[in-house]
Image 1 (cartoon, rainbow, N blue to C red):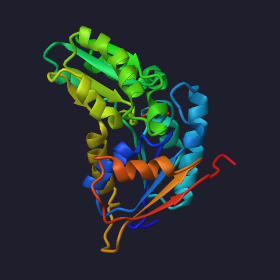
Image 2: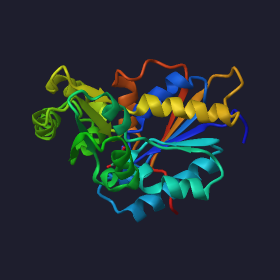
Image 3: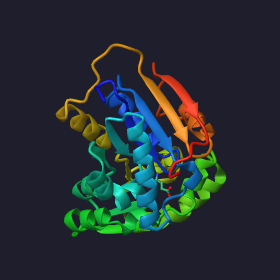
Image 4: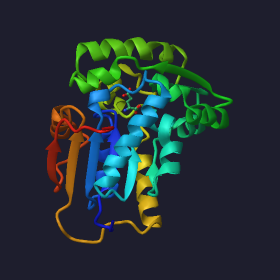
Length: 272
Ligand code: DGL
């Protein structure tokens, strides 16, 4: 492993691209290997043991490919598996933060909304962060059932997505929230619809930029930053098809054209 080694990043599917888009801004010269476990998506309703086993296999795959640090770009996998990953493998792991802290510190109405998966709400990270930062704040939380599937199927701009989001968001608006925390990395791809349906005074909190800054900090602290002038590359692997990754990379406003050389690999078997 050297400084030229790639940064690994994984998610249950395409959601981690919302974090990759931020990593490309904070660490633009790095090589990346992205693993989408689309064959096992969604993770949200799965038991923690299953998510730990899948995350373990993906981490082994990324480390075998030479990754020097891994960003767990999935709130659900972070909630279930980050302690296991850190205790098992010798490289740094950066996980997702539920972003309840900035929302709770900045709310004026003393009411915030959190949209996440069932697995994330069950995790000790969410429970402890809420206790620590949101004890004097009304937290209006909602499991975003069905939203991950809409993003994975490329239907994030559909009427179905808008109707489902209205169903989830309207009770939060009634709760007088002024911040909504996106507690799942798939949800930033729904921001165009959220902006349409949310009143202007409600701020959308996406933790991806803070996670990318933390990844940069950890890479620098461990002297892992890249130090050559070659064209960097991104390799995308999926346990089913990479088609949705390619589509989002080409169409999402989060990605500006990058100078990375990009390749895609389908139907990768992990946990053999
Ligand atoms: N992107 C994952 C997360 O941040 C999605 C979970 C799922 O697959 O249900 O939680």
